[in-house]
Figure 1 (spheres, rainbow, N blue to C red):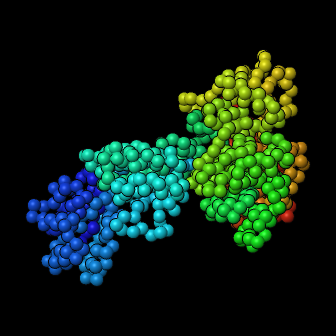
Figure 2 (cartoon, helix red, strand yellow):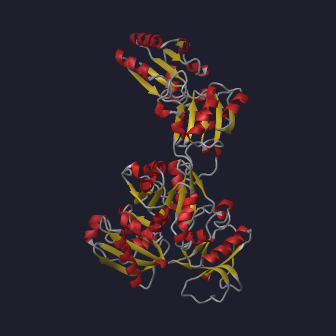
Figure 3 (cartoon, rainbow, N blue to C red):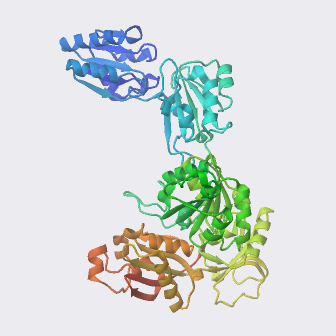
Amino acid sequence: MVYFVGAGSGSPDLITLRGKNLLERADIVIYAGSLVNPQLLKFCRRDCQIYNSAKMVLEEVIAVMEQAQADGKILVRLHTGEPSLYGAVREQMDRLDELGISYESCPGVTAAFGAAAALNLEYTLPGLSQTLIITRMEGRTSVPEKESIQSLAAHRASMAVYLSAGMTGELSRRLIEGGYDRQTKAAIVYKATWPDQKVVNCTVEDLEEAARRAGISKTAVVLVGDVLAHQGYTRSRLYAPDFATLFRDKKREMDPQRARTDLQPEELIPRRLAVLTLTFTGIKQALHVKDLAGDIFTEFVIWSSYGKRHAAAGPLPEGVEPVESAAAFARDQMRPGTALLFIGAAGIAVRSLAPVLKDKLTDSPVLVMDETGRHVISLLSGHLGGANALTRLLAARCGADPVITTASDLEGRFAADLFALDNHLAVRDRRGLAAVAGRALDGEKIRICVQDNRIRRLQGEGDLYRGLAVVPWPPAGPVDILVQEEDNRTGNSCPAALRLFPRKIIAGMGCRRGAGQEKLTAFLQETLQEAGFTAGDLCALSSIDIKKDEPGLRGTAGALRVPFLTFSAAELEAVSGEFSESQFVRERTGTGNVCERAAMAACRDGGRILLHKKARDGMTAALAERDWYVRI
């Protein structure tokens, strides 16, 4: 019997327990003497026969294995690191198959993971990289053309480059040519986990000089990627308090260090994306974005003026629609529920948008991406429109750099529009937003007063919104922010730079599969009007989770700029109250009522039904009023 065993990255205590046990049982060991730590051979019996494969060719290795099989002995083929990576094991296994000799594999710790441990590195940081590329430069052994360093670098993912320490100058050039920024963090880890391990931190541009200064030309792995900076990433959802798992329920109170409360930024991103391209290169980039991130949206539409300007170029690729100009695109696509992505120069986007811009409270979110896909810029409606969140999400999917220019984000200052968004508060006056933003950026405390002192402080230390000073209700003097119901007149005489109003209404909806968005939106607006409300009073749209991907419902939420929340049948059944029940609905969904229960489920900490189920043409809607409060 032959066992292929991974020796680990260097340190003898990094071999697996199974690998150690196999070495202790082995009658014969063939080890890669040029790379495997010889200290591992101390696990072998004294009578174990040991061969150094560094001095052998394949035929000699196979001959030893064949003789071991004939003698009924256990043979361990001890490879460096993890045998499946650059271990040349397949050719050995194929020969053993031909000879009818049985074999098994025992994994090991590869150098990329030994190097990560040396740097306390996580290769897959949310918002930066979710992919690790393990590759090498071509040297005496070729590399398939489709796997060239340049083509792999285009992804800008985390990368571990093996067997290339002697070619760092050429490696640096190809990484930059492929897509990495010159200042992207890099590291050279020599003999990871060995006693003489050496770590050299540098940038992609400085790889050659860093290797020269450190005297490293072999036995090293080169790491590249933004994750090496250990910053700029988003928090993992795995341990987020509001993220339920099989083993943990969603927490009621949120982490005080989080920048959001009930909503996640992704929930506020419009689910229709309209993309404009001006060149054939831009078209290819748009189709690439669609492949990588199209599933985020219920509708992903690509428009291009390339065919209009270059008639001889022939028809546009499938999935790309013609448009007269960038100005026509901006005029037609700036609408509720749609995000705009310009692929090309930011100046073109600015000039084409100028005539159609109305107000930061209602303008669609607008992004710009360069034709190489290296940068995604949040250009318009960063907070209230969700452009900043969408920029980060697209950048993470496409391996680009997110460019956020909002001053409050960059300087860590209080942002009144995000505060309003997090707390489901309506903003009616953008001038008030600007006034409060100016005070916050000057480092001044923002005085806030909330009707009836409806404030909840989060558990734990720290403030969710630093820079706020709470003024008790009713206010005795001027404040920066006054939060009160619109029909409340108490305290209205108090001067306030910005007035915010609770959005208290939650709509629960159900529908037949394939119901159109325009029809659903009109039905909901009619339902709101019947109860004396407008879309401006709406806090959220909710339904059962089997409808979470229903385009009509998601589109309606996007058009009205509210989050779309869904709940399982079990969660809906757990909601207490009197609801109109339907056996037909229960058989189809697992609960006797969707719209009323969903509206109440979204109220979370308390609410009441305002309008019971209304049904028409396969659509149902109900309205609930939530008990509102402000989280500080």
